[in-house]
Image (cartoon, rainbow, N blue to C red; front, side, top):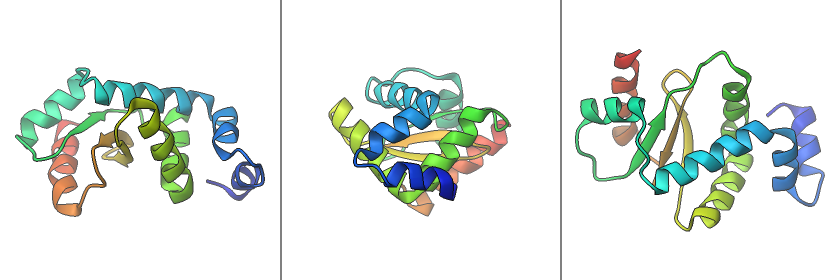
Length: 133
């Protein structure tokens, strides 16, 4: 998150509301992805990645994003900033009633998981995703 935006977000009392105000499309996307993850909604890219990766001991859902659009850039800013990522994970976990963890992966794709993934867990997902590109 750039300094100007971070100042706007963290100089207010309600950080989440300011994030929602500044990044409405990203907020909506994360909300949709949280519910889609919990409800195990099908996604073609996610299915293709899971076919390549095979069975895992953890739950994840991955959706492909265009690496050139503004939403992808906003998601990268929000999830790349540890404070906003933690705030968003906490909020959306409470909203959907279970823990969700957000990441960007591959070529700016979005990954939702049931825990913070280790390198050993995420590397096969990364390799499958780039293979599909």
